[in-house]
Length: 340
Image (cartoon, rainbow, N blue to C red; front, side, top):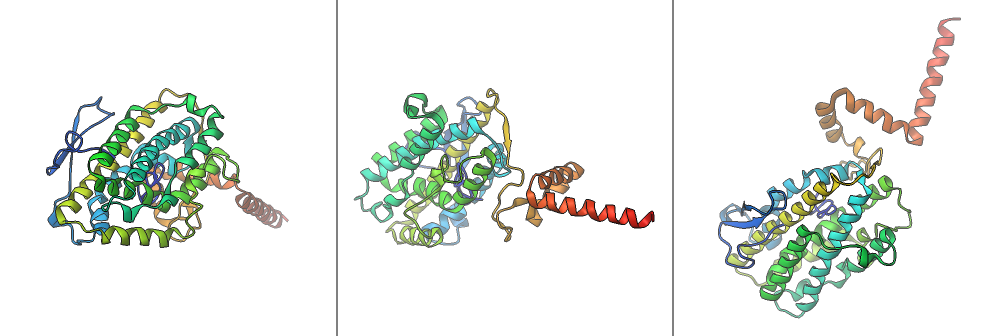
């Protein structure tokens, strides 16, 4: 489920943090500030180099961010999103945070597009700012720029991106990898979840962010991107620093999720329930409730309450209604036969 960061913020391949003193030498642990604890120090351990089996940068990034990726997937905001329980105001605020994040990433990638350490990964077709601007105009109106502002958690993420873009462009690779690869992987899943839960138009208004018009095959593009990363002429120490920076990027994203969750406590906004949320897994065709693992997990944790919820969700769909009607008809026929 990477990506929302990637979902939602990410989605399926990726869903954030910073180095000691914004750019000082990274040690085995890196210091960050957390919104959740009021700005106090938090230490995130980077994975030792000897536990990474491959020297390919793409494989090192995948292995080195596995743990923090799983933590990002299990934030309450992401779990609610993937279940189709989305609060419209929080969805809008999430898009605002994404806009400022991508504005920073794209300003720095444009600045460094000719830098030898970054130019192989310069792909303007990945840019998300214009798409996010269209979404924000849809949600807030033509004067949306006057109605939104960058939140504290997103601002720290933005500052880190600008810092590495100016001082150490190679570290931009970690931020681009964390965001764009996740968006490509989970974007279509999240798009459908949001459209269904928020009753957005099928024509794409409000979810332009998830649509990559310049990329026809997400799978092929991700393969190209990883290949370009692996071809970068980097020593092992630099690759390890990139892994640490990617971990920080995930931590930044989690801080934004946590911040949104806190904001939600003060927002009086109805939770939208998609009914039968979308989940691309095990060949389920986009229905999470058809996933055997998910269903077993929910029954084990929720018992009869989940079974009841699933039945009610089924009855909200035409197919479920037809099946229910057929069952009632069959029972009526049986009763008539029995009492004859």
